Amino acid sequence: MIEAHLPALQIVLPLVAAPLCVVLRDARAAWALTLLISWAALAIAIALLVKVLATGPITYELGNWLAPWGIEFRIDGVNAFILVIVSAIGAIVLPYAYASVKAEIDEERIYLFYCMYLLTLTGLLGIVITGDAFNIFVFLEISSLSTYVLVSLGRDRRAMTAAYQYLIMGTIGATFILIGIGLLYMMTGTLNLADLAKRVPPIAESRTVLAAFGFITVGTSLKLALFPLHQWLPNAYAYAPSTVSAFLAGTATKVSLYILIRFIFTVFGASFAFDVLPLDIVLPVLAVLAMFVASTVAIFQQDIKRMLAYSSIAQIGYMILGISFASVTGVAAGLLHIFNHALMKGGLFLALGCVMLRLGSVQIEDMRGLGQRMPVTMAAFVVGALSLIGIPLTAGFISKWYLVLAALEKGQWYFAVLIVLSSLLAVIYMWRVIEAVYFQPVPNTDAARNAREAPLSMLVPLWILIGANVYFGVETSGSLGVARRAAAMLLGAGS
Amino acid sequence: MDFAERIFGLYNYWIVILLMMVGFYVVMASRNLIKKIVGLSIFQTSVFLLYISIGKVRGGSAPILDKSIETYSNPLPHVLILTAIVVGVATVALGLAFVVRIKEAYGTIEEDEIHKQDEPGD
Image (tube, rainbow over all chains, first blue to last red; front, side, top):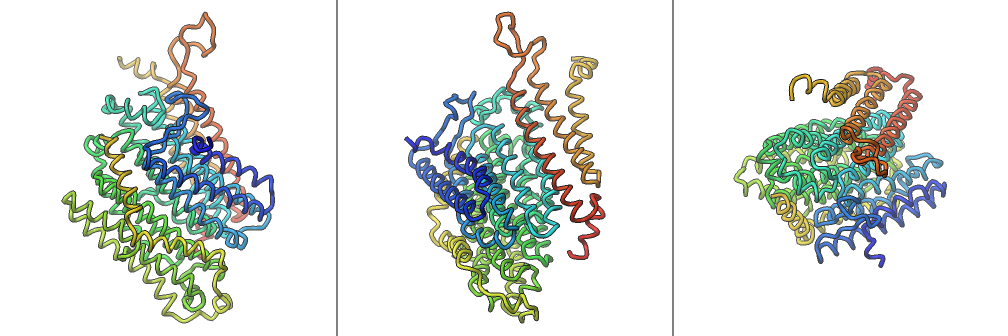
């Protein structure tokens, strides 16, 4: 009985729990409720993935209104995978949040933090699960508006300007998507994604559909911080509370990327996007620029959170590159990198959250000699850094390996060279941190001398994510199998 | 479709495009945080008009279930845009709330002066 309603519960549970947090008004109670809900969301997402892999796509008609008139939730191999990623990051970050949020946010505002956290989770999961184009916009705005608030809760006053900047850019992006959806509705009279997929190809050459595609592509590119539309991201990640940076880095841009994948492959079809329109040139060029420019900028950052934010922009380049190959290996590598990047960047931001808690700063000069004071945290940081660079036996290696394979498969060997070269830039910026942490003397400040290991409630989630980097770097059949099946399905549906 | 028909027959779409460009320009060009929000609001409003224009059927009346009404406008885009208007209101409210807090923290809402204050710390 309840099993049939799992798709609805995935969204309804966090949505209903969010106002409950406001009613509770107590930091500890709100945290406990959020913890419960986020673990339930993870359990539901895993159950859905297992079911989808066993029996094929699930559809769920909300309120029993039949699609395409009613809103339909449609879960296939692609979004079941993304659902698990988003809810897993959400669930792992929360036990960590308790101590970190307590240190970084005023006591009387903590329950509001958890309310916003649940709303963000609702929005992100909603975007992924829904099969209705307008519904995507609504959930996108739910998640975006609550994300702006989460970013603004940072202690630094620059968090406020970062959140404002993010709001302006995010709203422009979302409005572009809205225009695109409106133009598609104008031409087809439907908002259901599966229905759109049938009705768009016959009229794909019309100017209105071309404009719709342009608006949706640019809008989602803004939201996913594709170079050069990334300006909102570094400040938002750098000044947000540590928990928020870790949560967003693993989920928000990935979900926007999912929207792009969904529209390119399911609605418009890969042949339209890559053969009729020049996306097969535009996307790889922007991706390569992102990989090099953002990585180079990262080398010169003093604030390590900001450095990781720039590194995120570069990593998004890898995902876009994978998708732009439009082959099963390429798209699978892109999807796999969404998953692996969520693990490594989530882990790295969690490690920085521990540093923030004990040191009150993540500037590189303050972190000197921290390897002796916080060995467990910094060891996790090193493993995360290795994964980011793409050293064998870590998750980062697997996705880059398949990316290189996809490039060679297409005969575009120069992309393989560029992937390896840009990874060397990652070695440089990560090495700067490791060098400062392990090979430089402790600065003569009170904060640095008194720094000690972070509490267990933060170390355990940190090591779960970092451990997952190693686990999925060695035992690849699970994640790779799911990503491959998802990619095969996307390309099968698109052509 | 002759020239006059293109200009005057589709006048609502021309207004939409004009408002969209005006709003977009104001968001991008102004350095005042409030003016940016004003521009954003105009930009969003143009999309509301676009949706409402999509739904209109020439000679159609309001979608009321009555025997005398045979053609009626498509109500769905209008309902959709109600949702988007709510989202727009929330966005503007949140944006203005940020501006209030920024003013408290910096004492100014001019982007250049805010950057100047933050630069030494960067």
